[in-house]
Length: 364
Image (cartoon, rainbow, N blue to C red; front, side, top):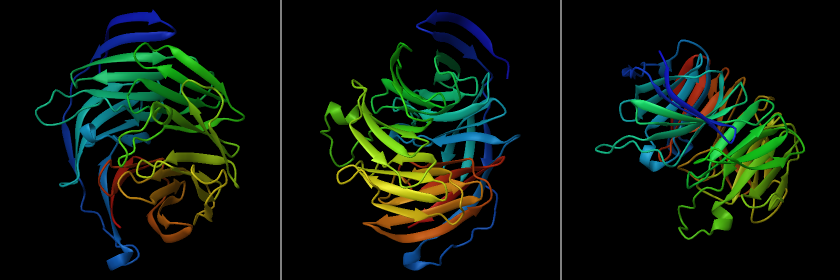
């Protein structure tokens, strides 16, 4: 799509501009693909695997919004195009709402809790992308016009970014062995934290759905996972770690903080997954091998306790754990999976596999 820059301003190494692009609305109804039951019915559960979308090129990133006011929204990237779409779980259809041209290959996407997409309310889309040009871009859109703030400073590949629960802060981690904290409103760099190795994942302390009285020391804490097997928790006002978790395996390839059990973190390493409890120990509660001996993505379910998926170049596996025991493990998808993202409230997730987006519904 054509892009016109209406204004441009440089402040604190930050670029502000407004763009207008033609709005495109397309609906892709899920194909009637095979829907195998994996592991049988009853207590063992089942999955429904459907083709959701076929893109024009390889999908480099995809992310469902983890927040209720925008839980139907999905963003994915292909061929330097960022697509914002609406997922209708009841009809298994994807409605494309907006296409934005991105100046570089997109490597990561993060949704802000300030995003709203509900009937009768003016849509507000707020998300951040990480590009291969080492620049983070915070995009705000009403699906007709878009404003963009660029966060510049990383000197190597940016692997992940994340908003805090208020939408005021943004963290990013990079192959330049730093984690950076940004003020979203101004684009100013708040802090740079030196890491021992490349940063591969970051996430802020999840809002506790069972405890609405969390203090700022908890809500303003964020996790940084490093490739050489260390996961550390920091506070936005401190550069000294609040907690340091060590992996029995390395290199780490991904890590995640459970939104359902905020004291629980998990990670994938070369051929293994592991999980920690912040309340008990700096060593993993459990470490288990994956079916395929290659690390990849690790994502906790946003709706079910103890449920997560691990993906790699060979496919996607679904797990459910309780205590120190692995009570369920089954393969959901064969083949390369570049990204996995769970729905905010439903037991389903989206997988980016080559040029395809696949929707997997899990009855657990």
